[in-house]
Length: 292
Image (cartoon, rainbow, N blue to C red; front, side, top):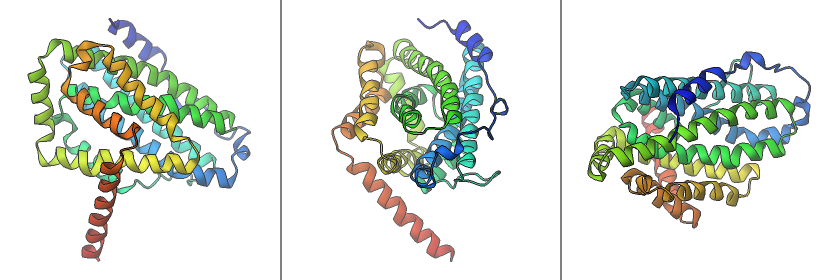
C-alpha cells in the first residue's frame, strides 16, 4: 500500500527548478549538429508529451475530492511543466531552437493537446490512471535512459536525473490509482467511466486523431534517432507485466484495452497507428487547401 502522505511530502521536498541549472555550462559542443538534428523531432515530441501530461494531472487533481491525492496530482502537473521547460532549454542549448522558441507540435500532438485543454476534466481519472503509466514507462524505461547513454553532455545528464526521480514518484502513484479503481469500483463502473469518457466526439477525436497516431509518429522519430525499437517494446511489456501481477489492475477495463494495444504493438502489429497517421495527414492536407 502506497503511503500517500509520505509521497506528498517527498513530492514537495524534492521539487527542483530549471533556474538551478547553468545552461551555459561547458559540454554543449559535445552534441554535434548532426546529432542535434537527429534528436530534434524526438525532443519536440518529448516536450509536448510532458506538456500534455501536465494538463492530464491538473485535470485529475480537479476531479479528486481527497485532499492528499489532489495535492499530489497538482505537484505532478508542476513536475511535468518543469520537465517540458528543461527539455526545451536543452534544445536551445544544442542549437535546435532559439532562446524563447517552442518546438512546433506535430498535427496529432496539436489535436490532442487542444482537445484535452478543453475537456480533460470530463475524462474520469480511472481512465487516465490506465493510460498515463504506459506512456511514462516508455519514457522512463527506454527513451530517457537512451538519451543519457548517447548524449555526452553533462547538463543533459543532470536534467534527466531530476526528471527520472520525478517520474519514479509518478509511476508509483499511477499504479496505486489503477489498483485503487480496480479494487474500489466494479468492473461495470470502470467500464462505464471509460464509455462516458470517450463516447463523446471530442473523446473519440482525441484518441483516434491524437493519442494513437501521436504514439505512432513518436515510434518513427525514435527509430530515426537511432534507438533500437526493442528497447521501447521492452518498456511497454513492463506495463503489461506490472499490471497482470495485480488482479485488481488486471480486471480494469481501460487497462485491458491498453494491454491489448501494447501486445499488438510489441508483436509488430502497428497498422492501426500507421493508418491513423496517414488519415490525419490527409485530413490536414484537405484542411490546408480549404484554408488557402
